[in-house]
Every structure is written in structure tokens, then in C-alpha cells.
Length: 450
Image (tube, rainbow, N blue to C red; front, top):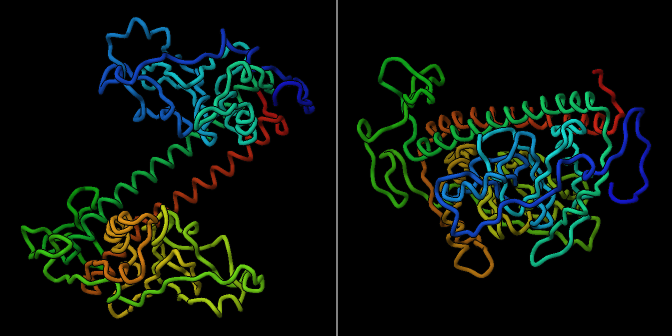
């Protein structure tokens, strides 16, 4: 809400204020430095990328020599200060983050506007929740003017932003409620990242060394660094070259029991196609029509942006469930996922329909994910348009472990994936709760007791 835009009716006790009326001093830019002044260590300084994810990311700060300490201490952040990106791409301009005191010393850097509130007028944690609403981000973006390859927002225009605020005690209570949900989301994020790291470590060893029955007494978890498991009532361990036989291969050292095969040897390869978009009867809601946009971090393809009718599916190259789709054209080349039902794909995707006597589908997914992405990107990089055709795709090499071992590998990795998926669902639920609370609390539709 900017300028003289017609104000909506507010709840009793609420009022509209302009941002410039509730700050200390002025909205201002940060310390300007030359890039040669950035060092590997020294005094941390906030940069555009520091707040790119909507919070202060200490792994993305810069460092300035301590020689400049006297010049820059007036730019030291205080707890509750809000940084807003005002020179950036249109996508990122208007992003904001609040400084919570970590790291203990942090300098306000250039290309970020500082909003330091008069805390007897507005609660900083209330304002940051207000600024992060999608509709408010859009209003802030609308204030931007075009610059070379980017947009910028003048502090004067931002100072005129209209903000609905309740009495201070109610602001604090609203901020407390929303911050509690944010903390739960952050905690869930850390759990997800932890298990992703575990999965990455497991993939590195399981897909290069495999897993065999252990002849040692006792069993500990992988996290305990014993690299052994209890599975199917037996004790298993990851192979090591000290105890087991390995051999050289085109893929590096692999267990002696493993073979190296081409993708074309483990099943049939199907390149997708697109039914004519001029014939609307080909499109409907009967069968998934998979495109690269439908393949993300998820293991399974459960929904697609477009669907085909029965007649559209009939003229397409049909793919059964438990097939492995791999993006082979474009900037997202190498993305991998498993089909869950009878479907079809567009021409940007090559699909492996596994020979179930040779390769367990879920194991094939993990081996393709680990071994195929780099060769595809390398092959595609040799061409003006990133593309790997069916012939070259079919020749990409992967290991072929014994079938029983494939199942064990898939079982272990699937357990980790299930945990990650469970936590991701919980995070999505929390984000829906937060969105609902923001819509109700920041408009006064739902009042809080203080």
C-alpha cells in the first residue's frame, strides 16, 4: 500500500503509518567498498547474497580487513535491524531479512537498505513478517525503476510504504506466534538437510562399493561410522578394499562381483514425443504427460502440469510404471525420476524401461542418479544446444551389481528418502499454517489476546 492508494478498513485500534514515520533516522544504504578490499577473513559484512534466502546466512557474508574497523563501525548492525535488497534482479529485489544477533558482529554492506525501527512505535519482528507477504513483495517491486540488467528502489519511495499496525503489545504477540512457526520450519529444514547429507554419503559408498553380509559380531548404525546395517534379519556391511576384492573398470574401482553395462543393455530406451497441440482432443485428464518441469527433487513423478486424453495417449510412446525418466535436453539435463503409473513424456526426456530380470527399478534410479548426470552434461556441453540423443544416451555406462545386492542398496537408500519425504511433507504443512496465520493476523481478521 503506497502513496494515496485507497486504504482498506482496519480493525479497531489499528492504524496506517508510513514506514518513514516509524524508523530511527533515515532508510540508508550500507558501507561502500571496493571488491579488492574483500578478504578471506576479518570483519563480516552483509551482501546481497547474505539475505537471498530471506534470512541472514552467515555462510554468504563477505569479509573486510580489520584495518577499516574505525571507518565501518558506524555501519554495525543492531539486533532487530532489517536489511532489504533494493538493487537486484526483479525476481530478488525487495527480499528482506532481520538481524537476530548472529554473528555477533556484522556490518551493513552496500546495495542493501537498512530499516532501523523506533521500537516504541513498531516491533521489528512484526514488520519483517509484514514485508515478507507475497502481496507486499509485489507492492515493493512495483516501486522499482529499471537500471542496467537490474531494478532499483529509491529509499524515498520505500519510506512512503503504508503499513497497517495494531497496538504495540498486539504487534509483539503476532510476531511471537509467527516466529514460533518460523522456528519450527527452520528446525525441519535442518533435519531435511541432515538426512540429505547422510543420503549423499551413503550413495557415495553404496553405489561404488556395495553392501555384503558381515562376518563381524555386532552392528552399529551408519551414522556411528561403522558403516554396517541390520537388514532382512542379517548383518551387512559396506565393502572395503582391505577385506574384499575390487577391480579396475571404466567407472573406476568397483567390486569384483559387479559388471559394467551400457544403459541400453539394462532395458529399452524410449524417447518421448508431443501430440499435436492443434488437436485439443489429444489433451485431457486421463494420462500423465511428463515434461522436464515435472521432474524435480522428488523421487517419484506423482503429478504433471499437462495430461493427455485416451486418444492422445494412444498415439504417444507409452511408458509403464517403475520406469526411469531422464531429462536429456536443455538447462536441466540430467534430472531423474521414477514413473508411478502408465504415462508418456515429451521429446526432451529419454526413459529407461528396465528389464526386471537385470535391474531392480529403484536401484536403477539411484545408479542413474549417481553415474549418469556428469556424462550427460559433459556430452551436452560439446554442443550449442544442450542435448543428448537416444543413441548416445544408450551408451552411457553404469555398474551392474548382482540383483539381490541391488535390492539391498535400494532398500537402504529408500529408507533415507522416506524420512526426507516425511519431513518435507511436514514442512509444507507448517508453511500452509504460516500462510493462513499471516493472512489472518497481519490484517486483524484474527485478533490475539495480550
